[in-house]
View 1 (cartoon, rainbow, N blue to C red):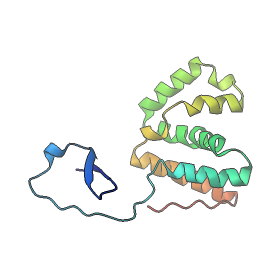
View 2: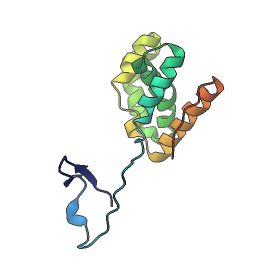
View 3: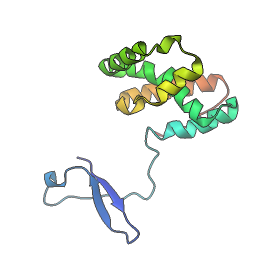
View 4: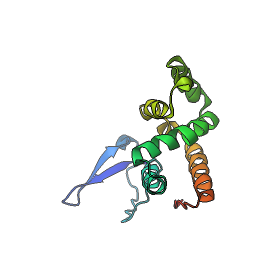
Length: 142
């Protein structure tokens, strides 16, 4: 079981996510000073690195990653969710729109948050592989 905890300025921990009623009477907690970057946040870090290389804005780069890598990862990982999103995009004439219009449409859609851990891994690996071929080396600690 996982709980989300928040620490205030007085070093008091408060449960902000999870069901505390399911905890056993006694349990151990390990507090870690340094936490890794959550899976979704790494895309924003990478978007800045990629945008420095391409000259596009980080926002555009994030949306491009979502479209070019996120949708294929979603199709592979969560085909039902992918079908729902594509149904909606098809109804909006997505494939007939310009690149900028497509990226604007993609920005409004949940893609990466629908992915499982396996789907996120596939997405990250795809992005890293492509950009390594372009000479941009994106790091991610697993």
